Image 1 (cartoon, rainbow, N blue to C red):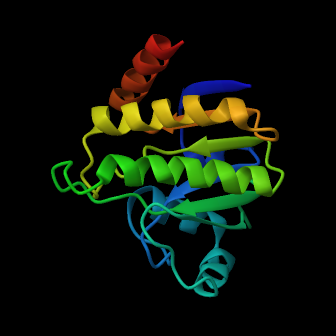
Image 2 (cartoon, rainbow, N blue to C red):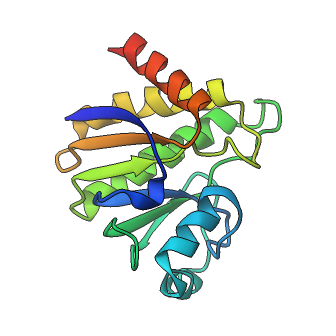
Length: 169
């Protein structure tokens, strides 16, 4: 089992599943959500339209279509409202539920973006602590998932995640 931090475009990775930082409609949006929908092609939005959305903190799984990843796990992170509206618990739930779906679907490798840190305004340092802490706590109990990647698009998140993972090990 391993946790790795990489700086890359999540839509280019050949892994079992990439995680989409989705909105509750699952029908596409900006940031990583828009990039994943564009790269996957129109089949992804068609499948997402049959799901009926996804509440904050939960996750849903679809095909990967034109992506190198076989599957997409869509999770809806919390909008930052100062930290007193269960944001950390909801964000941790995104990671736990994504790992649960990966386990249930036989996915051995999963790549996470920096959930909620874009337009949802979650402070990058606080989000990274929740992400690393939750995955480090859950991964040892996983039987199927072996490799977890935190995929950082920008250098700031990359450095932050690397430092936090080194402190955790």
